Image (cartoon, protein in one colour):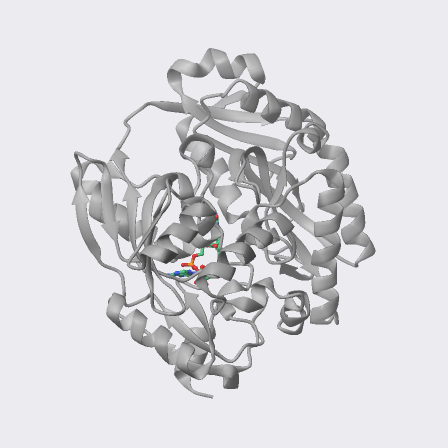
Length: 445
Ligand SMILES: Cc1cc2nc3c(=O)[nH]c(=O)nc-3n(C[C@H](O)[C@H](O)[C@H](O)COP(=O)(O)OP(=O)(O)OC[C@H]3O[C@@H](n4cnc5c(N)ncnc54)[C@H](O)[C@@H]3O)c2cc1C
């Protein structure tokens, strides 16, 4: 095994048992021409291509599965290319992190408003490919809402420029065929590197908003009441700037607070609107900061017994499953118990926005969870549990955020990507769309 393989194999998902011998080439291109060269190597030898950014994705997509593959990293493509404060955009290379973009924009009084917790390592192209966002997606949308256009290299070296309206290409025939089937930026969002390698992105930037925020804590006796408050906020397009729900926390990690609860922050002038929705307890800025800190540290702490495990990230509760949050959670919890898992923390962004596989925007609560990992479970058994939760969620009308659900289900998005790949070629990350995807990932846990 070579050191470069280990470096390129590192990823944050639970799928880390890689067969390094199947990696036939590792490229760190600096520009589009070098990307084309790397893709040509793969194509001429019949290898697949896996694009990789910061490796912080949780679905295993950047591993490339077990294909004989060429890995192309964007980590030598981190430049800011152009910025226009007046027209509100910045052009960047794909491998720049969100934090670096904002470090650059900050002195100009401008900001790129997409904030996943992983923003220090996640790259612009990686975040678009998983359609990520942070706890401000409710206000600012997900990555696709903040991307104006992308440039991409396909498996046969042809080039595409894609925006919200359609496609331009250096091949007029290809351009016409893709526009005929209505390909837009929405198809690239959450495509998990299955279409091509993104080489350049134009991102929407906006002035930094200065506003006075206040906030507090809403506590509930059970989660249905919490679900009702979030539903009201969504229906009234409430001006919440920060909303974090904690529904479960083991006594070792809860630091005195008592879930279910909702930590809230909103503009001072909207105090009456929020009070009308929920009877929250106001907190001064120091207490509010402490609560936010407890929340952010929750997944990083471990109860005194067992080893924690991020089994399945991002349950998306919306509609009835949000209104009946407690009942939905009880069912998921019972399933976890049946599989030997003990949930010890559930927390997440609410209200939140994400997209379904048919590109419909959806609003609800994205709830993450941590479990205590049972001893002696095989990878296949753990993946079985994930798949059982996906099925249970579909039954309950809980739609996990695409990042986490997508490789295992979401037939609509898969079908759409299949259709586009019939036109542009199928050399990028094919394992994710193959019927064997779950077996491959199961063998990698
Ligand atoms: C601690 C932690 C916190 C997190 N918090 C959040 C959060 O708050 N919100 C959220 O949405 N997500 C979160 N995530 C998930 C993760 O950060 C995102 O999935 C991230 O968007 C992936 O970016 P990346 O650069 O690391 O991509 P990678 O993991 O390297 O790749 C992800 C996908 O993008 C594709 N890809 C990468 N670069 C390119 C390219 N140039 N062209 C085409 N395809 C490409 C890959 O093939 C792969 O399919 C978190 C993850 C961790 C570990």
